[in-house]
Length: 587
Picture 1 (cartoon, helix red, strand yellow):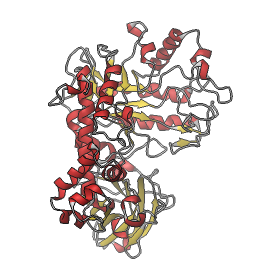
Picture 2: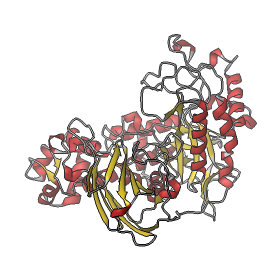
Picture 3: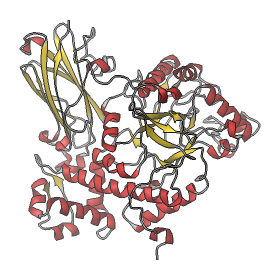
């Protein structure tokens, strides 16, 4: 028999936190969203993650030095008072995820700070890779919610709950995992197969998109095997599944949280700098705020336009940045910044400048209601247990602040963003001129990105398009997000027809670009361009950059106006978006 908590009736509709005694969210008449404090004041959450005491004494390793409050302060209370005093003096007003809120909340009321809690609900059942549709998964989620929520649910200083952090919503791989790898009678596999039957109806329709050795739905249920059929529309099945599993996950964690707390905000699950559009859409009925971890896309602190815009558009929710970060090779902890791909600069001055640009950029976006820096103190000199070894901190491992970054944090005055008017939207439509070679690095870091951006006119955006010029040529860049797993293709080989397809019409010149393809061992294939006289460079990755150089002599220029029309399809046509605009060349 299932525990009684699993037999409780499911909540029929999302319940937002509405009590004036707790934090809520609101949008002003002028279009800027923000948190509202229990007192009704607008609140831009400027936070820091992992405000904790560091390594405990019994786990401290002299061979791998790390931040440790026990060696720096007389007791926990002294550490808490010092930490809160520092954070407030630097302009922060929130304790981000994984902070020692139990210790920090024991301070007198005037010294406390609002905080957030990461519940890790799905992670207690290894979500989403183990069967999220099982009774065991629901039991684990509800049990975890009960244990973590009951101690804090009456605290007005609590802003709200994150259901999880950086779950593995890797769409192609997750789809195959549920369709093929779960046991035949498991609820998750049955749900995945039902999604396919509902989408296709007949098995013949299914075979038009998928290569399979099965001959009927019954045969497929017993022995599933499938690969994407080239030039088909099989990715609609992947997206249908992501919507189905997303709806199930978000409703389950919503119901678990609301069973034990009907008043505090549900803050999403902190995407890992990537989201599947269908999955993110499915979250909308079940959250109050959408959240994502998002380091700067470039080391100057700037970031893409589409990523946050689309997240806000498809969920209709304000967005909270739950981790942002920047590292420097010059640091006081001995961090080598060598284990993963976090943005890294050379000096603390550069890190502070990038931090400031990142915060100010986020503060200009009317639906962004806060940003939490990762993290309070540097990682250990030789890295964490999982291999990360980064100068992430506002403090070094000895407890000394980095003066450059903390001063910039103070000067940003981020809590005031909630009161600032919304800046004008839109771009000028004039192609800006540059005085460097945009092809040289393949990066658009140095481009005047706000002025060169062309806003999309069709589809849910998963890419940014920028246009600049010099005396001789027009340069068009595509910065696109796309996750593909070669396992979904026969022989682990992505056919040419299934690569990302960018079609560009600029003046009289037409160009077709294929990029993002992978070899069987996962290596990126070189960009391929159809268009005489057009040069291209590519910088691959989860977010890929392609830059085209088109000589002005090829554009059929007549006057100062230049018509741009473009479409972009992600791998195997999973998503499509477009742009259409007349641009001015300017002087």
